[in-house]
Length: 232
Image (tube, rainbow, N blue to C red):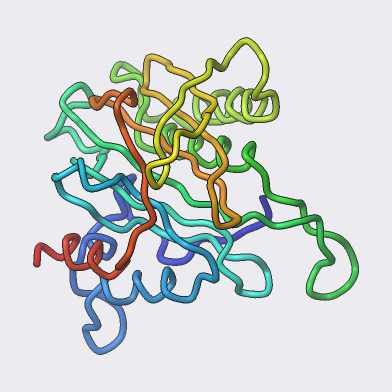
């Protein structure tokens, strides 16, 4: 997907700025700067439904060349980290990715076309998101880039073949309506993707928390995620 990210994280969890720390000009709280990107989106955001009672936090949004918000992620549970103080096996989190449904369309400068978004787009963003916050514990940092490039290529191939043998079917409620998802597990966690009402696609990834039994719902107040990120 030809998008750029707004509020790039300092680590897999988004760093201090994404979790409400001070940053930016004149000490503007990071959570406030991040939430503004979500507020400009022309589509609803999805997260886990009210059955989940743990921490919720914002990550980042992705924008097209014309500045329009195309997708974004919100987190639930522990903020995934690559730092050693919290081992991968101890992390319990679910990240929900919302992708705007866009048709094949002309680029802003009129010189080409922009790729249409699909459930595969959500699967790709979820798969790459999972890879960004985990790798084998025994892997040397010097080898991380090679491993990441290899696994990213595999994730892309899997996302492009949702009806292949790498995926299974899983039905989960979206706004209370049973919805079919494509689901797969790996040693690093799990990934799922499906379509929702409101012209969006939903992706999700996690580890330490089972995907079975989860439910998704429209986030009524995205600023509440910023408040929880800031510890309010």
